[in-house]
Amino acid sequence: MASAPRKVLMLHGKVPTRVHQRYAQNATIFSKRLGALRKSVGEDIEMVFVNGPIVLHPVDIDGTSSTASLAALGASDTTSSDLSTAPRGWCKLNPERTVTYRMEESLLLFRDILQRDRYDGVFGFSQGAAMAALLAALLERPHLYPPFLVDGEAPHPPFKFCVAVSGFKAPGSLSAEIFGTSYSTPTLHVLGRTDVVVIEERTKDLIDLSHNKRVEEHQGGHFVPSGANWKEFFRNYLVDPLGVITSTELISASQEASGDLLLRRLKPIPRLVIELCVIPPTGPKHRLPRLGMRTPPIMTRLSSSSSGKQVKFA
Image (cartoon, rainbow, N blue to C red; front, side, top):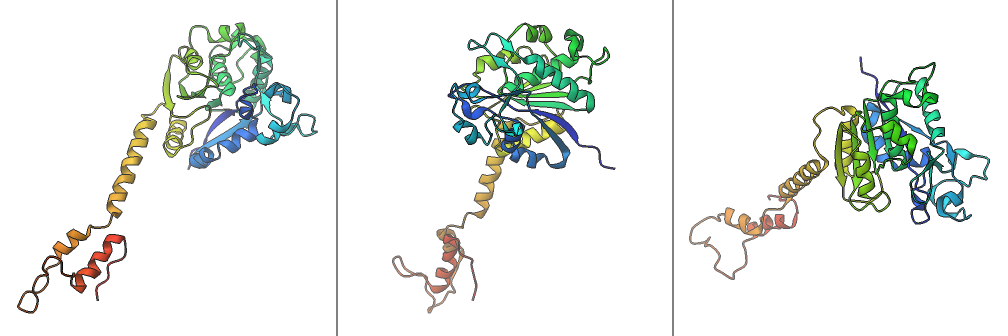
């Protein structure tokens, strides 16, 4: 009997600045952007995409009242009657990124979601990664935030793993109290070496709180990497986060080596080699060609393989 697929809670990102307006998301947008990964994991992993409770207005995203950026994201204006397509957030930050607002709304939403079903782990991107790590820590010490409890108990057991892509430590006193000095849920931290939205220093603040961590880097910026090596790595990690999983750099090197080997196998045999392998009949009527003479017909046909054509024998 086949085992049930692992269920993973998927938390989208949100970056409320004009320069980075394209990063505003909701569950639908995040799901579409992870289409390649969803296809890669197949039926082994069930990804459950959740909307943040805070509906963002255009001014929350780019500082203006224009809705053009929302259309570019595949999201609608929040004046629409259908708020399911509006961009969402998990909390709001002050301009100095020192105070967090409305985080409590997200924690209560997670309480309600987690008491209805069981999840093996959580996967978050950007602000969603910040919340994923915070939620993992809170499930270890749920009594630190009493409104999160259900009948005095945690609504859900601690996660088996957490994935934080371009994550950061959410500022504020509530976050500091929940994290304490560290949290122990196994956490995969993924950061982009050219990420200018969540810079490396902010990500390291979260990494330092993670007692049981693994850190992987990709060459790009603020996004969930989706190359072939990363799809393989994420699939293996989500299936068995505590297993021995090859680093993405080694997977990439192995794939490149396999590609080079395949090219070498398909590379045509040089003409000189073929000509040296063909020995025309000897005798007074079959002398070897002198330098500068035309190649005998049989050698011409064999030499055509150097251009990739199929070799045929008459």
